[in-house]
Length: 205
Image 1: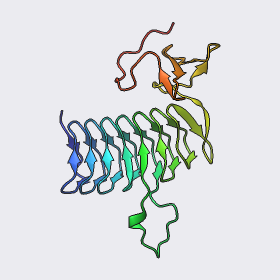
Image 2: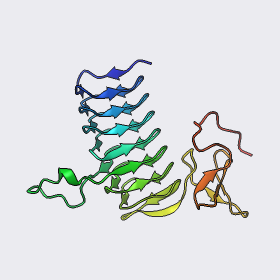
Image 3: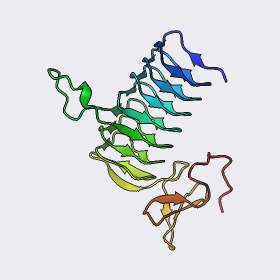
Image 4: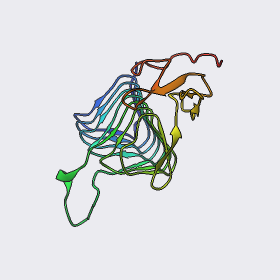
């Protein structure tokens, strides 16, 4: 797989770029940052020193991934979404040693212009609506919207809002796959192991 870096982009010495990744206009990947395979960075994306990004991550235009933020595999960051790493910044006070970690887990999608306040963990396949402001942890598969963001429902791995069935399970309207809560209170898909990739979609029943 060929890695593509546009001539206007900067990749600092010590940064690691995975095979098949694409880095487009005016991006800056700083030293010791690690970018997995098959990632796409849109225009004007900044990856801070030491940031870890998984494989198959798509980061749209005008996004900065600051120190303390980690993106697992298959994360989608919409245009101009915002991360922070300090809760109480002041220009006159240096707080580089006080960065709070933010973890975006596998498969989560962040909508355009949303804000993720530092210190939160966003669960697997969570879906944050455009313009939402997330101030705390988010469960797996949760649909979050509003300011501040609140859970409005549940989303499938394919990005569709789940419908509750009479037996207490939840159904994806696109694929027909069902989801249900396990003993730990975590939503899980009945049709696919949690760590398996998405292949061909089944026919709707």
